[in-house]
Length: 211
Image 1 (cartoon, rainbow, N blue to C red):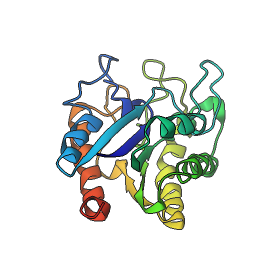
Image 2: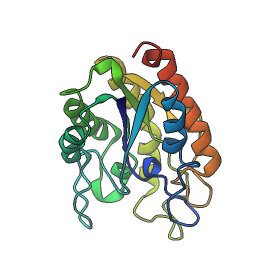
Image 3: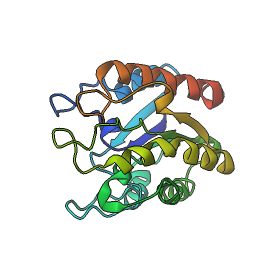
Image 4: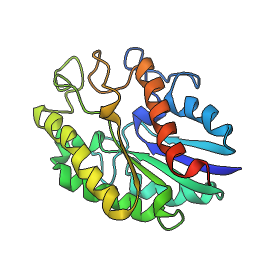
């Protein structure tokens, strides 16, 4: 069975914004997508990690640079046929001071790694859900700022251009879901269901029927 890798951060891992634990497989978008993909003869491999960035070193936690994880992921999954990548939210944190364009360059470095094994047309770039306007408040996630909210909203345009230039598929999560009002950062259960269907439709319209 061919494999499709879902590579991302806490919204790919399935973080529950209220309880701060992991949504079960039948709730998180990757689990729902796995069930859908199995009907097409594909296996979904979940590779989500809370706090993951594209290329930035978190001063408080090591091992979060997405670029550095990709070679190992590909070697563990020798039947990899496609990848879904949704990163960039953590790159918006104040500590990195990154613009949307700089985050886009980090994304491209990750894409370069994946393209060593996966055809460009089998890569789906997802611009992550946009941060809510109050995410930076102390009771939510003060690692972000008002600037972070603006940068997050700009990723859709930047990522769309990157995907078009490189011949990748593209989807903007913000076209379908918003973050939970509880933390303005993570997707709620309903959002996971909606995102799973949007991703599945995007893949079906491209390569699932011919892959």
